[in-house]
Image (cartoon, rainbow, N blue to C red; front, side):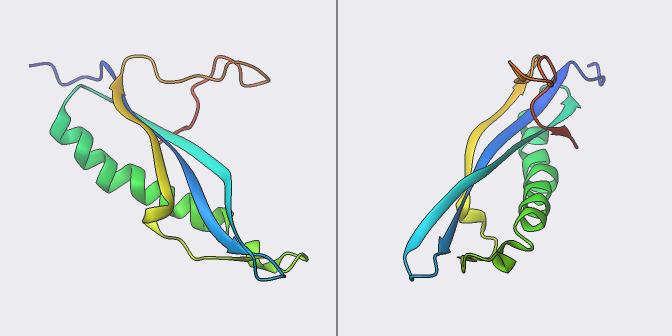
Length: 115
C-alpha cells in the first residue's frame, strides 16, 4: 500500500461569534472564516484524527488570535469567548483538488492554509 500523499485533507468553516452591543442587544458576527489543508492519502481514520488533532486546534488558535482584542473596540461591543459550538463546518473531506480562490490577487491558489 503506498504511503505517499495523493490528495489533501481539507476543512473549511465559519465562526459565528455572539456579541452584545453598547445598548445590550445580542448579535452574531459571522465575518471570520478560514480553511486548512494537509497533504494526505485517503484514510477515514487518519482524516478524523487530523480533524481532532490538527484542524480544530488550529481553528481555535486562529479564532482566539483574531478576537483577542475585539473587546477593545470603541463601539462598546463585547464578544463572547471562544466556544467550539460557534464553529460551523462548511467542508470536511479528502480531495485531490482543494477549493481555490476564483478571483482577486489570490486567484488559483488554495483557499486556506497548510497545516
